[in-house]
Length: 97
Image (cartoon, rainbow, N blue to C red; front, side, top):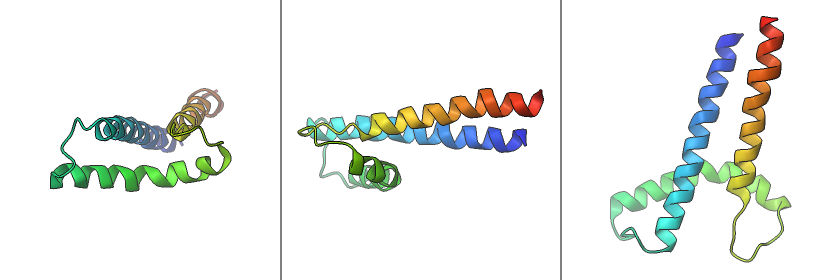
């Protein structure tokens, strides 16, 4: 069972990294720091969007419109942190103790 918890921790860490990378990429794109006409950059952006959008879409239904500020990545990170903390404290200690 600890292998399952370790695998879930890995998945949470990968999702965390992808969300942070997607947020940084969107800022670089919004401020024209990166060349949007470059095909490799465009492919990275589309990939990050396709990987993170399924996580954001349900959250965006419940969040109010903030006038151009998207708080869904922050909400998803808080939810992921809660799941990670719950797994590592409650579930792991119940299995070990």
